[in-house]
Length: 178
Image (cartoon, rainbow, N blue to C red; front, side, top):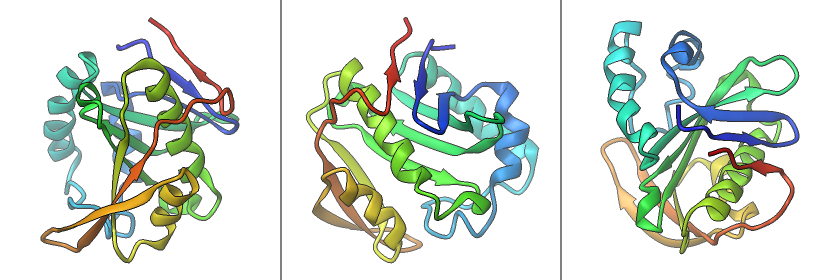
């Protein structure tokens, strides 16, 4: 599906497939969704209804849900979102399993996905909305040249919206597969 593989120093990231569902679901928890606009699905069946809606937009590359895995052992680390890619102003998002927080993986993954998108699509800038209180995610945006462009109020929290410029570089390596 979609022929996309994005490599970084410690990760390999590919579009979600139905075969990823059980492992992705097992990585979700209330702790990691505290700063997400959505609540975790209550069951695998509920998650299936969600991911089935992802598949058409993954296939046409308009909204990518990318499963991040550790390069060394293949275990699921979380999901990176790249939404609205054809708009030229795609939105980036990420959630990682609780036990890998604080290791710089979010910065690495957002960087590698932004490089891939910048080199494979027309990107004016990336939007990166993040809960105002989520300091770790704010640092990810800032590490990639993000600047505050605005704020949004949601049902769970107020968001800071960062604008990140396109990123063109060879490291982390981003591979293009057609």
